[in-house]
Structures are given as structure tokens and as C-alpha cells.
Length: 288
Ligand SMILES: [Zn+2]
Image 1 (cartoon, rainbow, N blue to C red):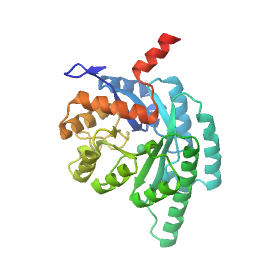
Image 2: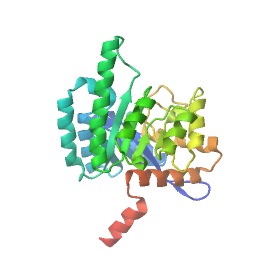
Image 3: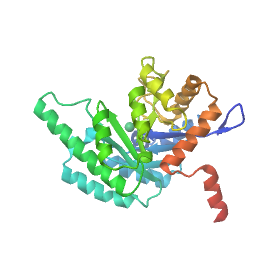
């Protein structure tokens, strides 16, 4: 565990990563070592399709430092039918009592790769919306956190959330890339946004302004590894250890100490996902 100048132990939590390659290639132990050296002590592995949800569920049983979600990413929807999605969602009931299960995601809408033809675009959007609503409904029924993916679709995602009767404080917009106006809109509804290494990119002024506007009271951060490696690793393979670079950048940008940022981030992520803090775990051991 790293210690700050003020003597506060740092425990960063990577609230959104996809360690499927690390798990499948047997590189997980090395990555975990680097992660611990950087003070990143917990990973939330985020599902994007049926297979990685199962992979992460098994990993969470084996590794104490992994929690996980299940979900079908909007870009993976076109390869399955709504009937198949219904079956996948029904199978999620089995996750509710599994160790390390913390929510649904990433789900939402992604309009960044829509087909050229108007008719096909409409079909794709309709399919994405229906799948999003089906998955939301399950999350709402079980009162669990929801990790949202919204790309070029912010307005439509907000509209769907409005009618889905979600509990706003259980909703996080992951990898927020919109600006101050949009973050005001979602914060006003009680929802929050999580930020990636994009905040360290030169051309991301808008995103940094959104971060500042939300403030540290609701802030969560993530790597989205293996994607979006922060400066100075931009373009390379990202991993949870690099979360500390994102955190350091944010502390400097907001003009606050590392320990103040660490305390807020740990509290926010722990409360949002219902994670156990280290002291709670120790208490449990002591009372057993
Ligand atoms: Zn992701």
C-alpha cells in the first residue's frame, strides 16, 4: 500500500476495467502486482457480453481484489437477438448472490458506428434502445448500480432513464466525454459521471471542465483498461495500475492533495457499488 506525504494510506479503486485478456492470457498476477505497487487495490471488472460476465464472476470468486458487473454493451447487441438477450438477462438472477457481484453494465446507447443507410440506422437504434430498456428494467427491479455507456447518444440515454424510473443515485455515466452543460444536467437529476485517462489528453479541455463542475463529492475514476491509456502511455495497452496516473493528474488539476482525493474517491466508489472497505472486512473477520 502506498502512503501519501500526509501519512494517509492510498487505496485507489479502478471502477471500470475489462481484464478479460489479463485473465485469459495468465498475465493477471503480474498486472495485480503492478497495480498494488501503484496503490490500485481494487478492480471492478465490467461486463460487455455474456462470456466476459461469466469469466469475471469466476475471477471474483478466486481473487479478492475483483468485483464485477454483467451487461451487454450496445455495440454487442447486433450480434444477438432480443430473444437471446432475454435469456441472458434471466440468467443474471444467479449473479445476485454471487461473491463480488456489484451491478449491471455497461449498458446504454452507442451511435458512433451506425450504418450508412437510413433504414439500417433506424433498425440499429431501435434494437439498441430496446436492449437498453430490457437491461435497465432488470437493474431497477433489483435496486442495483447501473454503469452506463453513452456515446454520441447523451440525449436519448437521458430520455430513456427518465421513463425507466431509475434510482438516480445508482446511475454512473462511465467514461464521461461530454462537457459542462451535460454534466450539470445529469448531476441535477442526482446521477454522477466517472472519468478516464481522457482527462490527461491535451485536447480534452471540455471533459476537464465537466470534471471540475461535478467536483470531488461525486467523482469516480476508472481506467477502462485495456483502452484509453493515460498520458504518457496514450495509444498503448492500458491496465489498472495506470489509474494512479489519472488520479495524480486530477489532484494537480483540481489543486487538492493526493490524500484528499484518495479519501473522496474511495468513499464515493465504495458507497456507490456497495463495496466493503478494508476496515469493514477486518471487522467481519474479528467478529467471526
Ligand atoms: Zn468499458
